[in-house]
Amino acid sequence: MKEIDKNSLVNSATSSRSLTQTVNGSHQFVIQGYSLAKGMGIGKHIAGDNFTVGGYQWAIYFYPDGKNPEDTSAYVSVFIALASEGTDVRALFELTLVDQSGKGKHKVHSHFDRSLESGPYTLKYRGSMWGYKRFYRRTLLESSDYLKDDCLKINCTVGVVVSEVDCPRLQHSIRVPESDIGSHFGMLLDNMEGSDVVFNVAGEKFHAHKLVLAARSLVFRSEFFKQDGEKHHEIDLTDLEPKVFKAMLHFIYRDTLAVDELVASSSFSESDSITAKLLAAADKYNLVRLRRMCESHLCKDITVNSVGRALALADRYHATELKAVCLRYAAENLAAVMRSDGFEYLKEKCPRLQSELLKTVAGCEDDCSSSGGGRSRSVCGQLSDGGDTNGRRVRQRSWNLGDS
Image (tube, rainbow, N blue to C red; front, side, top):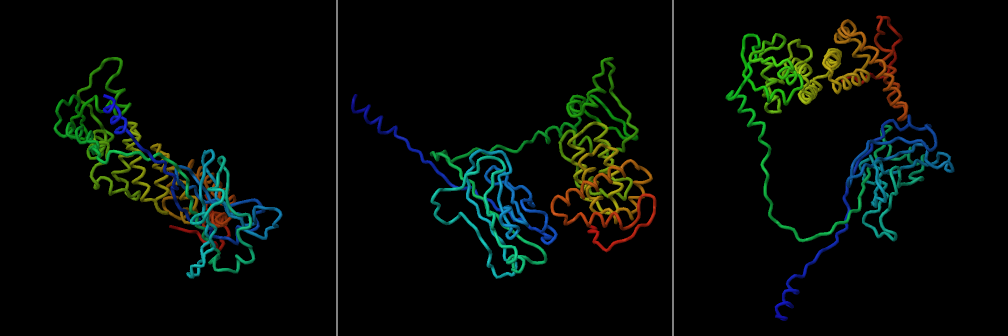
């Protein structure tokens, strides 16, 4: 008996392993208009877009006049900052000033591939930074191959330190099929089994199911289950075309848009755009996801000539994302937009939107000024090129409009 117990103890032995490694990611920050950024002041920076590595957000900070007042603008400073919440985040860093001559003589400051006496750097909280106050002397930088066409390129690599316990795992897996609920409900629509309501749309009849429609749309729910108990078995719709209503039913049952032909005609120059009419239907029946899908397709067709009509359409049908894109695009290309037929349509049909456009223009100028002033002159140039809303001509300037 004792021998059996001893063998049982031996056979039950287990093992585990602690594995510490880095999760690496890289980001390139391009600084266009370096000469315009100079003079913004010691301690003031230009920040790149946030990027994610190891579950944390990071950002590159570039100080054209330096971060340290003691250096009196003799050096540029570069730092990498923790841009999301985090406590005691340990990481390795590499900052590279790119040689744009093609010779490959980059200036590299790196923690990687070298021994670290004190281990990785620890960032205590959001806003903590690692980098160099004296990254490069400004006089040398401005005469070097790192600066080309008034442009600098800085590459950053972050390696976030993570630890996990590596235990033996089952090497087999079970594949879960993709959801097919849409196809099942679609079959319900196709074969009309159990349908209890009929829609008459311009003489064409569509059979559907009240519970399905009510589950997808609060408008349908309110219509079908009124407190007065009135039953609706056939409903006449006069404000939708059959092909638009059919596309809406396709979405309600399948949660996808209809075949590509239904969304191919997204041009704002066409008054009978199916996608635009589907957007109107989505707004009427409060189908939020369908509205967003239509916005996404219509957004791809925005041009200088179409943005005015697109903005009016977005405002009419509460397409907030599309409206924001239109306002921003029109503000960034204002002079060209003001000369378009779409802008004339906007002035005639939706004069209220002009004030919103002007507010967006002002916001663009503020954003550009806070990031070094590189594009604020371009926006001002667009305002002074073309004509104002009263048709008066103003003095033209030679700045680029940046039309798309």
